[in-house]
Amino acid sequence: MIYWVLKYLIIGPIVKAIFRPWIVGRSNIPASGAAIIASNHLSVSDSIFFPLMIDRPMSFLAKSDYFTGTGVKGWATRVFMKGTGQIPIDRTGGKASEASLNTGLQVLGRGDILGIYPEGTRSPDGKLYRGRTGLARMALTARVPVVPVVMIGTDEVMPIGRSIPRVGRVGMVIGEPLDFSRFYGMESDRFVLRSVTDEIMVALQRMGEQEYEDVYASTVKDRRPATAS
Image 1 (spheres, rainbow, N blue to C red):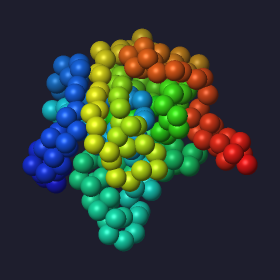
Image 2 (cartoon, rainbow, N blue to C red):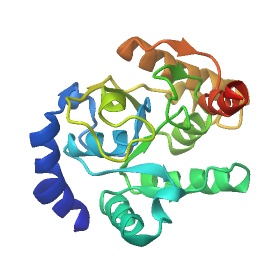
Image 3 (cartoon, rainbow, N blue to C red):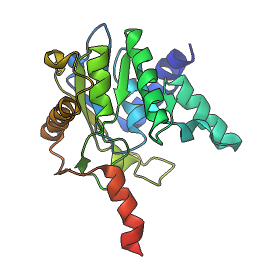
């Protein structure tokens, strides 16, 4: 109920009036059945703009920090994230990664749409980085199509470190669903998982024409403090 109120009565109309988001390829979203949305990740606002522009409800796997803030700001963020269908996950790896996989599979098992950022974190500089194979494992296990999506301009509206967005237009391009049925039953093969993941990243790079760097975005972020010092 909260999701529909926020999307159609409160946040949706306000966001559309201020930011005038545009979308290409809306018909590529399956009308029914489970599917994974695989998007590049430029800004925390990616998880806000995209769900507001498609007709079906969807959930994004979001880092748990958004749900644990304190004070009025923390409460407001938590209510918003839950109300718009975001699901908290622990991104520390190990057993946490397995729990995240299971959470995503539950969403897909209900026949819903699940949004995932294959880079694992926001791009620190606008480039497209190497994808994590958890997305491929989830797609093959659930046996669902993967729909590539490119967000455009969200990093200018709300760059990393900014809490209040600038006014500007954002866009999104939705590609045709990618079918990986030829790999069903091979979700334990790490070479297959890497191949599927790379195919998804190639589709994103071609659609958005971002500069691609074959290294994890988290590695680039970890290097920055050392470089600065």
